[in-house]
Amino acid sequence: MKDLSDAHYRWLVVGYTLLMQAVTVGVLIYCFALFALPWLEAFDAPRRDVMLAISLLQVGMGLVSPFAGRALDTLPMRGLLCVGTAAFAGGLWLVAHAGAWWQVLLVYALVFPFAMALTGTLASQTLVARWFRHRRGLAIGISAMGTNFGGMVFPFLVAGWLVGIGWRATLEWLALLGVVLILPLGWLVLGRQPTPVEAGHAQAAADLRVWTAREILGSRLFWIPVIAMLPLNTAFGAVQFNLGAYVQDLGYGPNTAARLIGLCSFSMIVGKLFFGALGDRLDHRYLYWLAAASMSIAMLALLGRPSLALLTVGVVCVGLAGGGILPMMGLIHGARFGLASFGRVMGLVMLTITLSATGPILAGWIFDLTGSYDTAFVLFLGLFAPGVVLMRWLPPPHG
Image 1: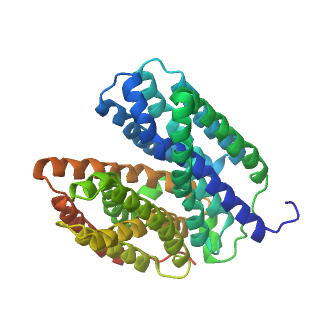
Image 2 (image 1 turned 180 degrees about the vertical axis):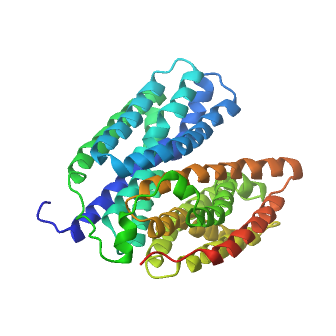
């Protein structure tokens, strides 16, 4: 690999980040529902307390992300990879040997957030941005597909292991598999750094500038995209996590619900590629407005009691827009804050985006009160409007 130029080697980095996200997100996020059932029985815990674990992981990751982002900008990536892998594998081993539910909650609150921050989306986008100045959007989009591939592969693997060897042994094998897949290849790939950027033009100067947290949080370059994206991400989460129940409430069977959930995941993959590639050649404001339009069409299509055809249109539009959110975040902020501060900027973005975790809870609460998700869909439509207007004043990238 020493003979490869940066132009070729950088795609190895993209492939590695895809694998890294597939393992971390695939196991900790997409497989959570599979472990929830045996945990309910093993720990005699109420459903509310079991669901609390995934909420603690999301909140913990948001709180850890600003510090992890700063570390990703300043410390050797190999060392951070070891810390993240240790948190992933060690956390799984601790849960496998837990004797009480509070011990599991502690792992989800204090250990797994470090695994998600240092071997998940934040670390992956920082790595990809560091290697790409041109075609960065496409590279981030391809890298982000790892979360969906992990969500398709690991649940099938875990489902078989749960039946054959039980949940504790399954967690132990996942810990070992994570170490084998992430650490050796990462140590090899991350041993090489991209050629340093030379100053001399506007974009190079922007890439080399180091922003402090106070400067980032005081800039409209940070807040305009965050405020505009937050409602989209909230609506996406609300539909994604309530989709199975919503489809069955409309009178369709579990098989239809499963097909639509799979269609949503596939649409997310397409959305990541589409918005990532388009972000390299299109004004980022237009990119956002396209995503907002797609999500708005979805909200309108899902109102009332839609036919199966209209329901399919809504699910596809949700997946396309939802898949494009993270690539757009990386593109928009990376182009305006540069490479030297990319990690800390995205760490602060991850902290603010944690607020979107209220989407599934809000939609479920509205359904409990009204017997329908319509009020939630209309509310989300109203929340999109300020962001659509605000993005008009997003300054262009440097250079």
